[in-house]
Every structure is written in C-alpha cells, then in structure tokens.
Image 1 (spheres, rainbow, N blue to C red):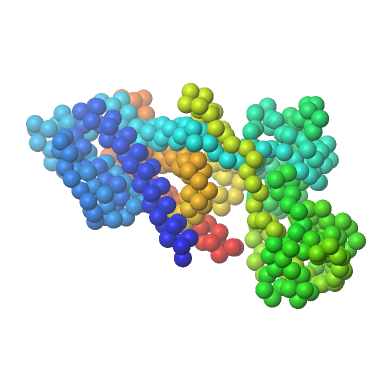
Image 2: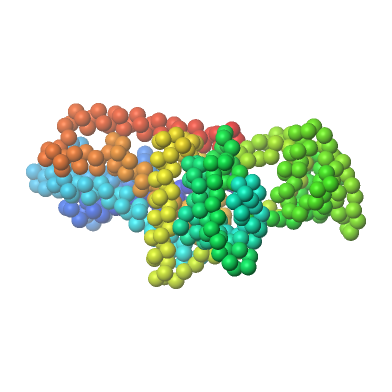
Amino acid sequence: MQEFFGSIWWLIVSLGILVTFHEFGHYWVARRCGVKVLRFSVGFGKPLWSRIGRDGTEFVVAAIPLGGYVKMLDERDSDVSGAQLDQAFNRKPVGQRFAIVAAGPAFNLILCLLLLWGMFLVGKDDYQPLVGRADRIAADSGLLSGDRILNVDGRRVDTWTHVGMALTTSALDRATVELDVAGADGSERKVRLDLSKLPEGLKESQLVPAIGLVPLQRLLPPVIGLVAEGSAAEAAGLRVGDRLRSIDGREVRFFDEISDRVRAAGEADRAASLVIERAGSFTELSLRPKPNPDIRDGAPPFILGIGAERSSAVPDAVLRYGPVDAVGQAFRETWRLTETTFGMLYRMVTGTASLQNLSGPISIAQFANDSAQRGTAWFLFFLAVLSLSLCIMNLLPIPILDGGHLLYYLIEMIKGAPVSEKTMIVGQYVGLGMLGCLMALAFYNDFLRLFGA
C-alpha cells in the first residue's frame, strides 16, 4: 500500500514539474510576442486553486494532474474586440506562432539539461563497468574477468548504465560491437562482440543478459539470505546463512551460478545434489527443484526457493562534477539519451523493437517511485529522461500535438498561406485517433507489466 501511494505521489510531483515547465515555455514566448494569455492551467478539470496575474492571465491548478494547457486569445475560439486584435494568437506572423508552439518542447529540452546538470552536481551513484565473468558471446569474444570496458563503438562509457544502453540497441540490430577494454594488468585491447549470434525469439529484456556479460558487482557469494516458505529448500532443511559449496559435483563460486545448475536438474526431472557448509561442517542434501510459478522476463523456470544474502550490489562509482564541468557532461548525457530515444522510436516503427517499450502512467508512476527511493540524483535523472521524452513526443508530426501544429506552420511558410480550415479539422480528428491509439497501447503495456504477462 505504501508503494501504491508513493507511486501516485511521485507521479503527481513528476508530471507537475514537467507540465509546468512545458506550459511556461508556451506562456513566456507568447507574452514576449505580445499575445494575451487567458489561462495557464496545470492539470485538467475542476480548478483546485486559481489566481489572476498582473497581466490578466488566470493561473490554475486543476484536479486531474495528467497534463496542462495555455489558452491564448484567438479569434477561432471566441469573439475578440477590435482593441485586442493585435494580441490575438491567430493574428501574429507565422514565425511568431511557430516560436510560441515550439517553446513548450524547447523548454522541456532545457529542463532536461538543467536536471542532468543538477544530477552531476549532487553525484549519481552507479557501478563501474567491470567484468566479473564472461560467458557465451562475451567469452567467445575474448572478454576476461577483471576487464574494464572503456568505450562501446568509440563512445566512452563510465558505468554499467551506459554499457547497457549501448548494448541494448546493438543487440536489437544483431550488430557487431567493438569494445575498448583495459585488462586487470592495465593493458588495453579491442574486443568485438558478434551479436548476430544471439538466439532468436528472445524478449528484449533478455538480450543483454544473453550476451554473457556478468558485472563484477553482481557476483555475490553463494550464501543463503532467504528461504521461501513452502519451498523445496525449506523442505530439505536449508537455512539462512548456509553456504552452497557445490551442486551436482560442480563447485559454486557465486550466487548467480545457482540458477543454471538448478535449471539443468529441473529440465531433467531429477533431484539436485547439494553440498552446503554450515558452522564449519559440510552436509550433502538432495532436493528436487520446483517450477517457478512467477515466470517474468529473464526469470528462471525452476527454483529452489532461496535468495542471496544481500539483494543488490553496493554502488562503487559516483558521477559527480563541479558546476562548470557538469555543464559539458549534461550536454553529453542529453545527446546520448536523445540518440537512444530516437533509435528506439525508429526501431519500434520498423518493427525491430517491440511496441511494449511504450510506457503509460502506471509504469511511469512506478519508475518515479523507484527512482525517488534511490536518492535525489536518480530522481533527477528520471525527470530528465521523462522531460526529454516529453519534448520528443510533442515534436512528432501528429495533429493535436505541438509537432502537428509546427508542421502546419512549415506548410504555411512554404506555400505562403495558412492550411485550410477543413484540412485542420480533419487533422484534429486524425490526431485524436492516433493519440487515442497510443494511449490505449501504453495502458495495455502497463497492464502487461503489472500482471507479469
């Protein structure tokens, strides 16, 4: 219940910040262009709070916090007195109208930069791109335990977050990736990952793990920290604090090795032989793995019902810079995120990437809550990603969105006359239909994630 209300709260906070900044962009440029703004609303529906500004604008906070709008004086919406015609939006030159509409997405881009700048000032904790173990494709390429990944296809990577972003897009394309790595002895070399070897039919969340790169920070000792009630482990007498020494005669060095050994026994429909160390003495146990009742993306099909001694690795890297250096880093990170976002959109359109990457308010609320729990820097990073996404989505040439209006103004600039009213009305209906389909798909994806489909 606490997570539920926390998700709602952080969703409201996140959307409130992003929508306010977006609409302020429209408002600020409109006022600079001499357009009278009638209402600046954060949210839709019944006003919860309002006041009239010195310029006559009504500022409103409304009940439904899923967007906002700026209502400007416009002859197409209502009658305008002769004394105010020069303040009407529709009477302004096309260049000014273009600037007013483009200001919303532009301010979201500016906000993204500011948030990332703040994130680098605070310091975002993450994980160094150190290889703990290399299996499958990673092992075939020559990656070794202790290697540090320096660059992916010529682009510097400082954390596993950067490595994951780069490898995900390459894995979707089944491309060959060149890594610059430094060995444990400090010597540098190049390694090529041939991702065309990835098996077909993998879900996107399984692509990067299937490469066989295991971060050093994930190599937890094989010490049991949890025994699930009613599990095979409980029935066999395993206890918290037991250390697994071997399974079926094979040594267990790290906790993440357990899943593959258990899977082999489960698929063979036989019991697994475990040697455990408890209080300095060794005991051999035999137990049969049970099918996993909650198979999500990447989850093992068979389980013993045990958990690691600690649930997550301890961050060993902090991305922190001074006020001046943080500016350059914010621009670089914004460019990295922009490339990744456009690349994913392109792959979704061409069918290379799944449409399940589109997230709705439920997933956004969960991400907001998770990032807020991880600390200020991670929440700033989440807001920056969301602000950039809002900028890009609003620039899509869909009628009813800012991008659709900008397309109309570009046509007007080229042909020297506005788009006909009939064309704009048809465009509004088309835009509503497209937006409705996108929202329905986003909600559908949310429910799939929520119920583990």
